[in-house]
Length: 600
Image 1 (tube, helix red, strand yellow):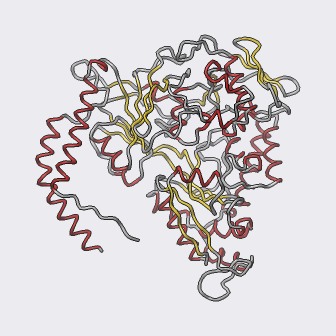
Image 2 (cartoon, rainbow, N blue to C red):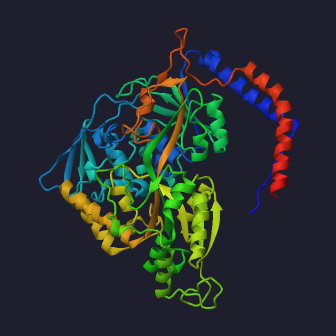
Image 3 (spheres, rainbow, N blue to C red):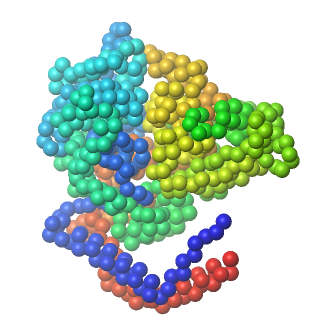
């Protein structure tokens, strides 16, 4: 492996520092300009920009954060427990005697950001749009409604949900943003397809949430303005700016210099350097994602992956504890089930005797017995057709754990005789390859919702070419999934959910590697009032609702004013640094150059 070297010269250091001065001056000018006088802006540093502002095309974390702020949903996830609670609708709804009809009381007095009242008609429209246009990203959230007009609003404050079969689905908060019918209504016309709906840019985005999207300059970030009439109470800040940075070091620099007020999703090595920084508070959340190896059962996926012996061998050939220790620096915990441990009501853990622990010898024995042997003694096994057996491991270059985990996994696969190679692509390219099923296996992650239905659904045949990782299909599992959806009491559903987790663990349609916490940081000299979801060790932002954004407020300054609104390091300080930086730059140039030369 080679590494690109860059030696920073004296002139380059001066230019770099002067450029930073320019950024600081610009930020200071923004903060003090008459147009923004008196405004309180909270600036969030993120690793990348939005991919889309259209909620029906959303897939990544940034998009979900945007629409959690821009839109309301039928229910909220409780700040304290992540259990469903009343939002636009009162929780719980009323169920009919036959279990097929649910009636919801809808909150009155809510308005869209353009002033138009939000009513039950908007909710019925949104759900009918998702159901009838088969918007796969959200359709699974709605259970099994009748084919057409499953949702009706007899008046402004009543929603009726008709189901084809009895189910508890309406009690599981449908993670569907409610959109205004007066903006999106045209898409119900038969001439529009789901593809047409997903092409709608949606900027600015009319919503009913605590903030609404007003600007998105692609590649430069997006801005959301506060809704002073929000039904949960007005935010204490005027707007939120999400500013993307190209790499973790740039994100850290933006926080420490004051260009941003908070950052999310830092890699452990960068996060550790912030622990003792002045005016910076760090937070290690409970696990909000699981990282996994997903296998492809369709498209160009290697046929050997259909053999459970192969998947079982890969599962025990991977040293998950080593991934936790070496890739996450101990912040993550060992993975097994697809439901996170933090969702304690639903999670299942294998017993000691059931754990698929690291055992490369047992993995090799499995492959031998399955007919994948090294015929010619070159250290590489042949497949069942007698050809050298190779698997490609896809990793995502801009996802913090994927590449380092993938490199270790490739090494462990080679140890058991599989000629594994790594292919690293951007997240955008990974989405393309996922959509076309053009991969063998990949190392990625999931951030599931607190209710288990969605993450369990991705292993069903219906989710093939939608949310499914690799088009896994198992009729036995599909029946288990439908049974938990049709359960008429929570105790029965919990038992079925437990059985499904164990079934997936035994069948290995994918391998859960570790549970990943979110590493967050914010400046304590700018804003206060951050809340965790759930307490005591939850997420500050990028959570399951807008709670921090509703509660943060500027820190009071000594003169009675506020210290909110990012302005950066004072210009005079940067000038001193620039002058000193020329001399420092020369030293850096020499020392880095020599160190690189010594290690070549």
